[in-house]
Length: 80
Image (cartoon, rainbow, N blue to C red; front, side):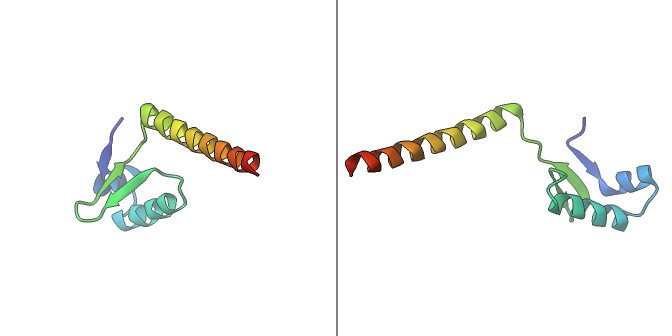
């Protein structure tokens, strides 16, 4: 799998113009359906795929925040 691809290569592979590829990719990226960014200077599409370790780390942090919030709420109830 590739981490980046030129817009020219994509356009030629699909038989469309670079402008069409740019427009369609921009729509998909804005809608959150494609985890990428477009380098307009180099005309390159780069993926920013989160790896499994990063996803696990983010989920752990989120669960920890949730637990801290619940403990703080319980603490307030007990102090009343």
